[in-house]
Image (cartoon, one colour):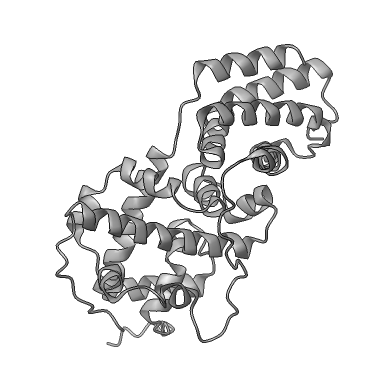
Length: 212
Length: 86
């Protein structure tokens, strides 16, 4: 019979919990930073999440699900405590319903209001752009994304969670995670393009040639 | 001698449908075989979508590295102290 949090002795459970937290400290801190965008607040958020996780440890049925379970607690702490106290302006809310499965693709909907200049580049990015793109530029652009996209990109692209696991953390349907990835990454492209244009990294002589 | 292997034809998709599936593909979430085959077929002959896919792959790799943050020593100490007192 597999060992669960309910069947471990208190000492074993505490040792196991301590080990898991050690392994996930960097991930927790990075998630906290993406949510709060502030180091001191991120530390407080992580400490609160770890305290709550320990209080609820006996409710964890499957120890293999520890990471999404822990990340969900962190996210809930952020929503219930930090966000309420935050003086930051409320971010624009987006319609998150996945687009119905009809003739119109979701990407088409996302691109519909973009400028032709961006669309031309979007359809045919220059190789030099990828070479010149720095990790710091990308992260700066991610920091400017609305919170729901920042956290979803962090969970999937950095922490390597599946869409189902990210959905479990954020308590949203997996289809919404898929949607957020598309929308978040399209917004990210727009920000990177803007940045590259200002920095002179894009020559601007791209052509729209795809259409098959 | 005929080498007809009776391979089923893969239905062509357009760029928007391919890009619609791009992130799921890069994230290892495009699991249904038909969608995967259609996507791969499209980027094998569409230069623009291939370029976009390459660029998104580079961005994914950079996010994976740059999105990691080392937890500060102060937080590590605080958490260890916290757990010791549970």
